Length: 203
Image (cartoon, rainbow, N blue to C red; front, side, top):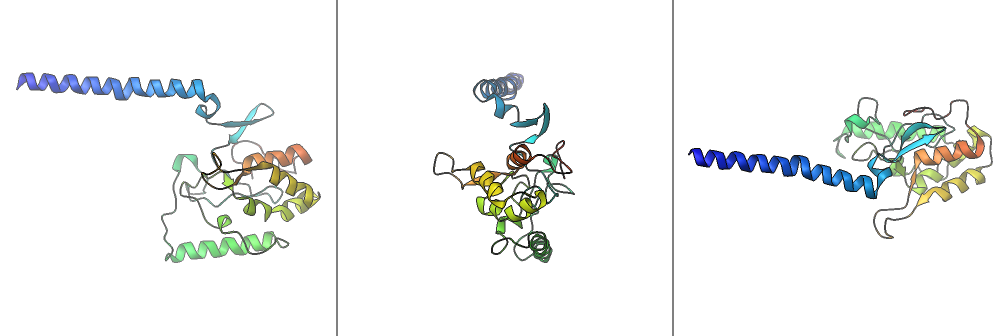
């Protein structure tokens, strides 16, 4: 019995060292060596300050900025410490009411937008932190953003088109637009509106 206990303890110690210390250190070292920016969180800086991460969605309420997908992460959404979906199914009245309210708000805020509201603008991602919208979701908002900034819609549309990322390796996922990076492009091209991007949760 004593020998068996000693063997078990030795195996536990070896496993702990290999999987709890050596492996994480190896993977972290490789990540920092091969992909230093991504390993550091893909932080986005403006004027020397961190304004967000290219991997984490955040809310933009100003009409002068493109808006992301809705978020169920945390009480107010877009909480990186509480990444999650709403867990509400298609038969949920709460979900239907929320989607309907978001649709009405978007239609009111984007009176000249072409066609119906894109589905992605009223549905949250599984993580609640998706930093992207599809090209259709971004282009649908061009009129509002251009009017709020007093600039030609064609110039705003050109920024959207330039910011579209294609499928990964040409076949994985869908074309997408990073909302934070697009909004930074707006500020760089036209200057910031009355309330510029400032910090991690701009409005």
